[in-house]
Image 1 (cartoon, rainbow, N blue to C red):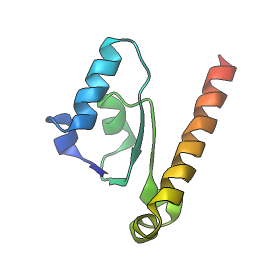
Image 2: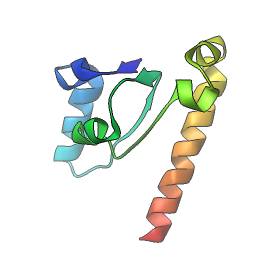
Image 3: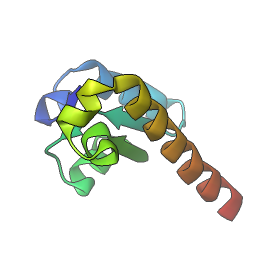
Image 4: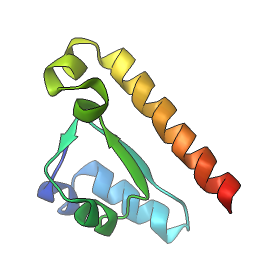
Length: 88
């Protein structure tokens, strides 16, 4: 889906992020697209994220093969997380 201002106002990702942060957990997100800045996304509680439109080249390409796009996004986030955890 799309990460936007409505996310902060009650969409499921916003609620899950708040619950995770209360438990001291990191939050990673895979979104179809977003129109928010990095600072806005961080303010919603996401530690790392990726959008399918960027990783696939366009939203149309992401929609034409969602399984591949999500797989690429999950791999990229896992690699980022691994770099972050091994650096600490």
